[in-house]
Length: 243
Image 1: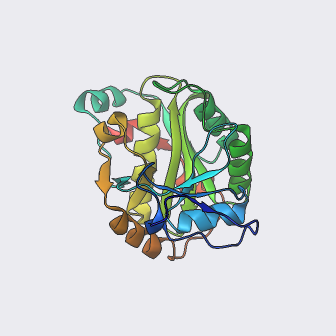
Image 2 (image 1 turned 90 degrees about the horizontal axis):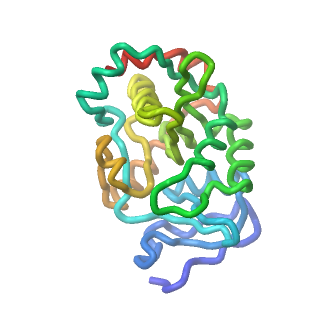
Image 3 (image 1 turned 45 degrees about the vertical axis):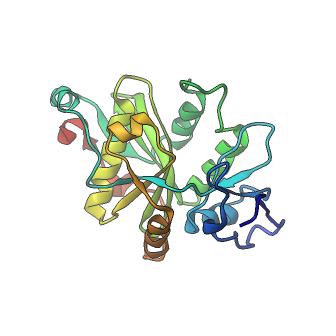
């Protein structure tokens, strides 16, 4: 195994090295360089790889082992939180305020982090993916106010989650649960959550060995699914239906 990450060639269509060749330390670092063009990003996700870097760093590409995932029938909300949703007026929609969701994710202070990895360059790249119908957001709304959201990338019938935020307590939980609810209805089995943390585990995230994850990705990204806005297909999902 190489002791250094691979240097990507300038051609955005060039293939990535196999994810199995990622480093153990730091866990999952596979490649460096390249760009955030749509072709490069979609190739990465098809290979179970994602970009993650901070301002001032080169673009870094990762495929950690194990991989944190949610089964779409496995998102877990506490009994207390579900009881609170029974009287909620919040609703969830999709692809109505993508740029606002990713900007909110970038601005959200996070424990143990100084600054954000969702740089202006990253935001622009994913807004372009959204324009092309590959990146999607779920917005949680209290009237016209955005109280939470999640965004990520869909390839075939596989959803790769990138980040979520809460402007009010529970907003991100509702966004994740609403996304999982709709994906389960559509027959999509999995949401990639990339790297584990305590909050994700509390919501039902699982750790999968990388080979198992890559097999699922290889299968599901090849299944037909039309790119485009999810707004009409997703519709309006009242939060109280998640209770």
